[in-house]
Length: 229
Ligand code: URA
Image (tube, rainbow, N blue to C red; front, top):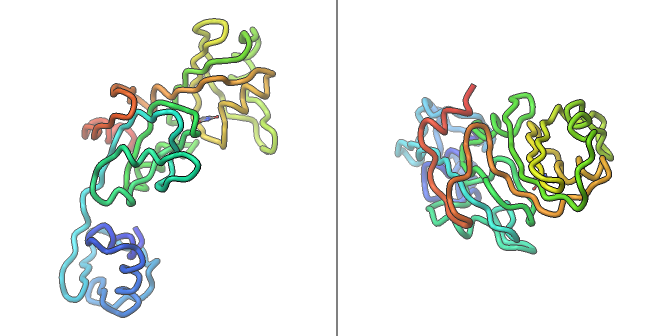
């Protein structure tokens, strides 16, 4: 991770304060003064601040049930941030691994471990996300085949990756995708002449939503490890 991030993860300093400490020459990595905040460091490196050895805090892995009309960024904007619901220290270090739109509800995974979220977000890692989708009109017979093949979204160069459609009722389906383009599910249904009226994420990888709306819990070690490959 970057040196400035390491300093934040091992002290109570903000990013600005950490930057100042580094630039002032107060930080040593393996006994060498480092003033480049972007230097990549590893937890095995001996890192000191004013002579004191630093140890990064343990990474955190959280499952949350996102309510409607909340946003996945760390600060409130047009809607309140879902981080208002997560009462942990240093919440500003956390991010959502795979954001949902403000009106989308359901499962979000929250962490401060960027390498872990990479395994969830990156399409080539094939991590499946399952959405329950409410539609404005009955699903057409050919949509499952179209989604399995891939559809062209406006403004995208490549077809969507193969997706699995399971029909629950004429206007309710389960859609499994392995990528997360901007408004992907809504745009996929728009591409086949339908419209999403409700969207809820039920599952990411092997993890299913099992807490009430607005609630959260830490993932078990087994759940955390289920994404590392
Ligand atoms: N696809 C969308 O269109 N919106 C979401 O929130 C998630 C996936």
